[in-house]
Image 1 (tube, rainbow, N blue to C red):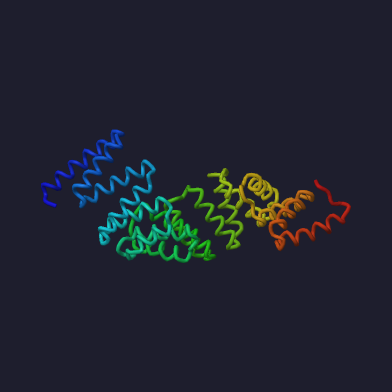
Image 2 (tube, rainbow, N blue to C red):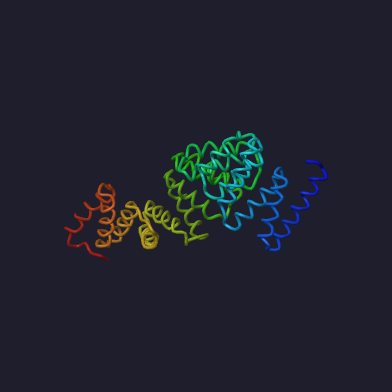
Length: 304
């Protein structure tokens, strides 16, 4: 494209941008469509038009436009990255990986982050770890770096690599000192590392920052139970069991234990029954029921 023609196209794009800024979206779409018809090499027009389609929630039109553009420009890194980011925003994890795997980690580090997150969402934790670590090793200082540390900590928790999870959580701490989810991650990591005092400190900090998140209540209950603080364990586990959409047999059995230690035997029995109904082989509930049977044979036992 000659310099004069480029200037003309740019003027047309600026006019379309003004239409969009004024809320005249359909006018802007018509203008961009005409630009693409007359100047198919104008990648910026494709990008801007796809953005307008996306803003109108016409996702298929945006995707078709960008897919066609990539088909005609398969070696264009900007086009491939733009489409990959678009698919990422739509939660199209497999397609994101397919489009962005074209890049090596050193070539486009950001692609590694998107790929890592996509694998994480697909529960492919080992593949997520590799991509997130590639992104971090690139040394690229971007807004996504702190998120990469958070997701590396989460990924290593799922891989049961708790020492590595702690390492990355501490890296994230330099960015997110007052982010409740980070303190929750510390609490979870310390829980699995059997560092109960540290877990209690972290979960209490988490509760100060956000006690409405049900996952915080779930972990608070589990951590206080491990710390033998049965009154607090009962409080947070009961809240979680009452408000959560799904409750695992594990939580029912833990709540039963909390009630057992409070000498609320009927409540304890109810929750052990719920645990065993979902999981007849639940070891915690089965063992606790044996203890309940012994207590029920003791005339001193009561429901406090």
